[in-house]
Image 1: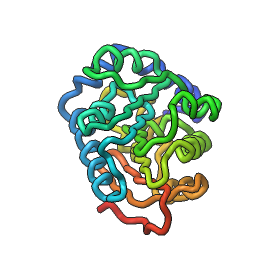
Image 2 (image 1 turned 120 degrees about the vertical axis):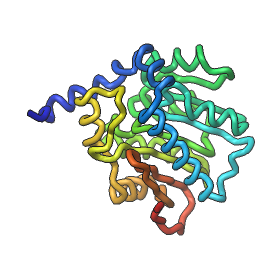
Image 3 (image 1 turned 90 degrees about the vertical axis):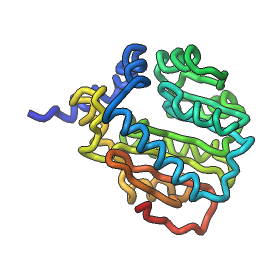
Length: 233
């Protein structure tokens, strides 16, 4: 029998418990199909970046929401971003990054939608050229919270900056480190193209491009206007 929606809601509030130190180490050392999922997303992410020619990614600022083990923080370090910031509401994730990364990004343990907006702006020290919400982090929020995340990001995204969001596609959340109930809970919170375009519009942003892997749908969202939505295939 399928889990009830009540069970999904309970699971939804308990997501940070999943990401303990043991899970994070297994995630970082994932092999086989799990490693391939991560690689496919990274390649799709870089494809979207190349399409956004206005973004100056050298000597700029980068923010990663739901940073987990710091995979995208390492990418930003390799690309020589001047300011690199990671946020996660899992204490274990923040501790993992602080212990294992070979550089010193700015790390914050907080919930991006419950933190008072003005305090969030002060903590982060201004706006960013590039913001990422990757590997299904957006699926940890319900539809109302997803809109709030995007609205919050619009406040801290620079003009002509870029927000890239990666959502699990429904029924394709096949990451083996997740139990079935967790995969199902994440899957039902998928973000469709129409939904993302609508949320971006409400946040005074613009969906400029999207693409898909076998498991994720990635969106490129910007402040600038008059760009047509482009199919990523």
